Image (tube, rainbow, N blue to C red; front, side, top):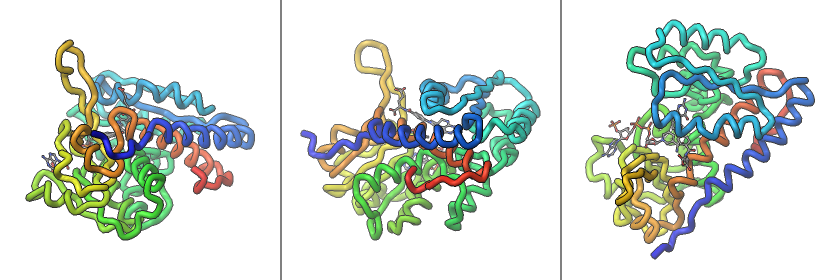
Length: 298
Ligand SMILES: NC(=O)C1=CN([C@@H]2O[C@H](COP(=O)(O)OP(=O)(O)OC[C@H]3O[C@@H](n4cnc5c(N)ncnc54)[C@H](OP(=O)(O)O)[C@@H]3O)[C@@H](O)[C@H]2O)C=CC1
Ligand SMILES: Nc1nc(=O)c2c([nH]1)NC[C@@H]1CN(c3ccc(C(=O)N[C@@H](CCC(=O)O)C(=O)O)cc3)C=[N+]21
């Protein structure tokens, strides 16, 4: 029995992309060129391939240029750093995304540090991490920002709500916690060393699962009526036919019988991530050209 409302991230992402397209058209008119996003892929990580599949098409559909750069998995780190330098200096490139994870012989922190923070539309550079932590304008990682947009659309104000974030990665968990704190939630960050995770989760009005463990969060861990945001993207073998399917970090069947609202996988957070990337890119384009934009409309 499903009692929870299903939070339609795919539909929300469409409306966000429409607003981005309007801003991109206005940018092109003022700047005399389309805004541009460069995506750098090193090697062939399967999760990264899931991510890039629709991204180029969506970038073009919003009226922006997409520049794709592919390096072989065994490319020297120096080649990637040189490419980042080139993109930093390219006036046609407003945003740069270096797909993670990188091959093991590359130092991710070093590569991210090489990005111009004002083109870092992923929000991974320490300058942007610091801006988020101190409340200064910068770029916020796409997945957590997309999650907060869905939460505010669903709940209105988040002020005073108890939020539990499961996962403490630099990409999702930590920036998610910062954003919820900025929305005046009381934030708990759980991770693999957390004791009695189910009891911690049961206190929460808002649960954000970013763990990478298929269907780990069960319905009986939830406070009835809680809002559940499932960030997990896990490819698991399907029951019979030898194919695979995507599942989240939340057991949707049991959780949707207890939650007040829940994001599905697929069709929840994933589509928002890409839409927010386009949003951050058009914001970067305006800021870096000194053009006015009402960012609150995006
Ligand atoms: N929808 C989207 O757009 C995106 C989806 N994802 C998905 O989100 C998930 C998380 O991604 P990411 O943050 O990069 O993953 P990481 O592997 O970097 O981090 C996972 C976190 O989960 C914690 N964890 C692991 N096992 C447990 C456990 N049994 N109980 C409690 N906590 C646990 C880890 O704790 P510890 O720190 O102690 O090791 C860690 O903090 C993945 O499924 C990924 O595919 C990621 C990015 C974008
Ligand atoms: N620098 C960098 N930035 C990232 O934001 C980043 C990254 N590296 N590396 C990989 C992860 C993963 N990630 C996803 C985004 C969207 C979907 C997505 O669109 N998912 C669809 C499903 C797609 C399908 O059906 O295969 C959905 O959930 O509906 C998935 C995964 C971004 N990441």
